[in-house]
Each structure stands twice: as C-alpha cells, then as structure tokens.
Image 1: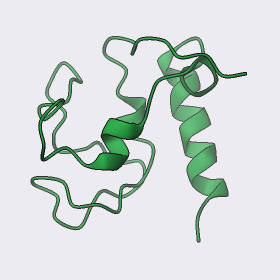
Image 2: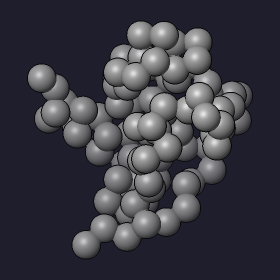
Image 3: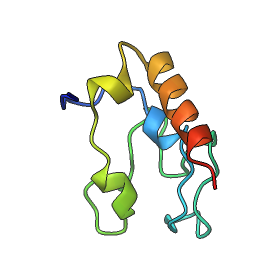
Image 4: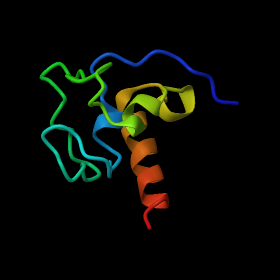
Length: 88
C-alpha cells in the first residue's frame, strides 16, 4: 500500500524526472523528461503551485513513500525508471 506524505523541501524530482505533455506557462509544448520545469524557482519550489494554469498532471500527482523514497536521489531514480517504463 502506498502512503501519502508531504513533499520533501528542495526536492523537485517530480518537476524534473518525468516528461509532461501538457502545456506549461513558459513551456507551451510541455517538458521533456530529465529537464527541470521552467516554473521551478531557485529554491526548487513551483512558481505556479495552486494556480489554475498549473497542469492537471502536476496538481494530480501526490507524494508517496514509494515515489519519493528516503531522499531526493531515490525519487529521481524511481521517477526516471517509471518514465522509461511508460514510454510509448
């Protein structure tokens, strides 16, 4: 069972590792995997968090122990592997 927990400060793995096909302000064609979202600030916080222009795939993603692991590097690896497994 996957448990939900709060985001880890200065992680942003979910804003870097996966690709996003939805338009993002500043990235009208979405975001390639492994590229930081343009909406990340210097503190690795989303500048459009909670705003209507934030893509649904972003707001629908919820942190979990499975996805986030014990540290940022685990989250980046897990999300990168998931991205590779789900490529068309």
